[in-house]
Length: 135
Image 1 (cartoon, one colour):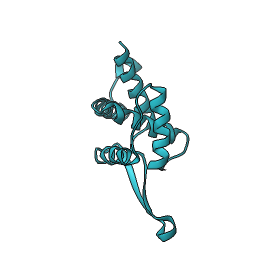
Image 2 (tube, one colour; image 1 turned 90 degrees about the horizontal axis):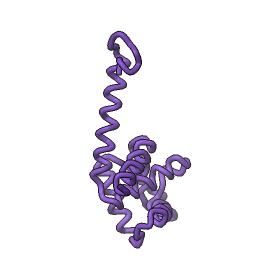
Image 3 (cartoon, one colour; image 1 turned 135 degrees about the vertical axis):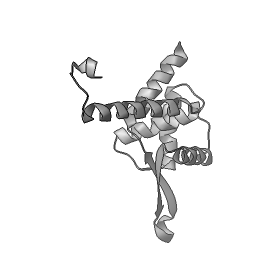
Image 4 (cartoon, one colour; image 1 turned 120 degrees about the vertical axis):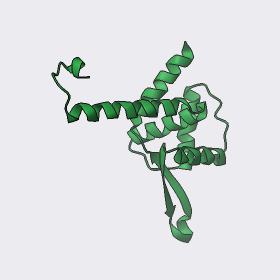
């Protein structure tokens, strides 16, 4: 990195930047290891986050997920329960944050999800995966 920048020496900013690049690479590899539906769910949440629509309930995520799968010509026939299971799995893997909401008798209990990483990492990784798949 110091050579690319033309810097003479290494300072703390170089170390922080290198750590960020390594972390980003690890996240991309973890995303790449997921199933196609997990990729598409992460892409759905990244899109929702960029629109400022997170945290989102699983019903909202399912609606947007169906749009994303249709755009990728992937069978989107799935139940809300299946989406909720995938969201829970992605939460356990550290990709998502989950917030439990309890609105009492009138509103009920439900979970809301949002990404626990930058949406750009997900979208860039998705683009790379799609490019590799198309080769």
